[in-house]
Image (cartoon, rainbow, N blue to C red):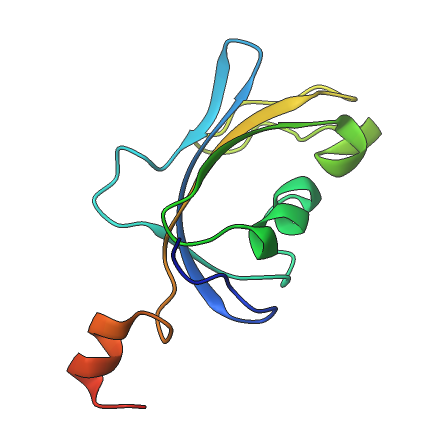
Amino acid sequence: SGPAPDLGELAAIRFKANYGEMKIDDIFDSPEPYYTRVGSGGMIKGVEEVLPMMKVGDRWTLTIPSQLAFGPKGRPASAGKPRIPSDATIVFEVEMVGLPGKEPELIELIGDV
């Protein structure tokens, strides 16, 4: 029932991503949400396509096929991040927790109308 983001707008999200039983990332346990600009390419394509459809307060579980995730190349391991094999389907749980600039409480605090 909350506001939905526009393309290019800053969105505060929380998410968890898994490949099978392997945890890829989990922002739900962190004190701060992850901030991304909707449509900027900061997330995998399958998540980018869904963010504009979400409203503040929504929490969705997405099954993202390989072509909208890491594709045939997969992703090599990096510091704190596991290797993701080629053609992996990723399960992403994402929650839209805020839209700085569209939330009435924040607008009242800042004084911007």
